[in-house]
Length: 150
Image (tube, rainbow, N blue to C red; front, side, top):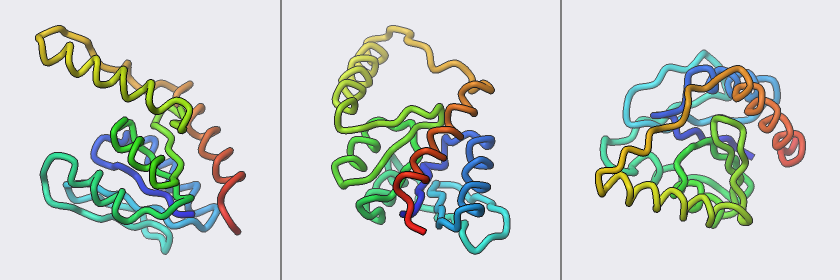
């Protein structure tokens, strides 16, 4: 298992949790973004910078991931592509996207996108809080314990 991070919008505190987990478990973690990223020195941490553009980082993640890899993203269409390719997905708040819930999430996302397109203010998610960080760390640990080899 490798961990892939849709890093452009991933909160710093979540990246720090991921860095520690990758180091502790000896799992390769790759950040993918369209801007330069810095990672702590580690043989397990990598950063890939892709060209700017709509969904370029997402495309790189889908192209590179293998079945059984874990992707961290809040991007619902990317999550759907990862699941279709046999990967696991959690968002920065610790919610796991699965074959059972991704269609519903995609429908809701598309509905809200249509509302925004028609001028309705839908707002965004609340700021990440301590409970969200703990939920993410717990779900990450659970998935790594269950699926990571070694």
